[in-house]
Image 1 (cartoon, rainbow, N blue to C red):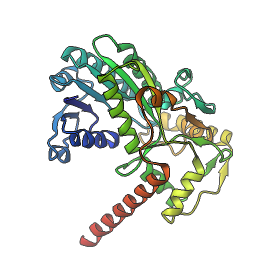
Image 2: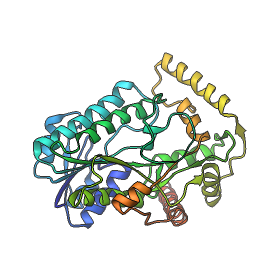
Image 3: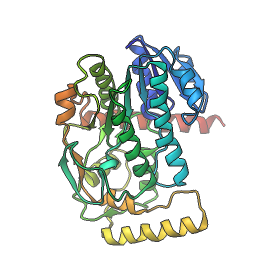
Image 4: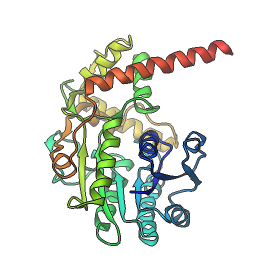
Length: 341
């Protein structure tokens, strides 16, 4: 790799990836709909554009040998058109632009949600079928997008799809902050038995996997055209992990419980009401969220280990220590800002 482009370079994963690429001494271009002055100060070329605009992508990718396609519309609520135009049409455009511009390698950031079909997933590998009944537009659109990426392999570009699960760590301004806010507001309840195990992926390990995938495509490429699950050394008991985090931050533990059928039914009712009323904000419960909170979903990482040489660089315990320190720093900064005002 010498000259690379990153879509979604202003997001949590994208920005961490860009920083590592710059540290490697590579020329990096980022395309996004917003300006990124912090990236520009690092010497990154930032292009204002939308991945739904094929011409903008072609102008961005010219001269690049590798593209990391990280951009996506995440979340579990919103108009179907938004998810499919960004996640599917945008990905089709990225593939087309790679071919037009002679980009050799494409690493795509996917999600394990593509195989989550409302049932427990315990140690399954990449042979698990795609979900036949996805419960949100995000998962449905990512299924089709990943399929496009893997089909494209060998047709003018070599491709790999990575499936990191529940990415967390310093720099996350969405998943963990929302979890903490609901915890402080005492709005969380354990859904189901509370013993379900899930994969999580610390941000440094996710970036490590992306770089390994790109390096792999530069060499043998025997894993091209495949998807790989990425996570920590072991899954965690979800609610134990949440309560461990809460304890370190002096947030009361979650102890109240609700059966999965009740939470699932509440999600269905809220989804229906919000849809009829045309409300943009995400309901506090959806069917997808209920299943994610109650079911086990952890995966074999053997494929990534054997083909890419992946193993976590940062343990779950060390990651928690780093994240809590970062969160304390964020809190101090906010308090300082308030005092100055």
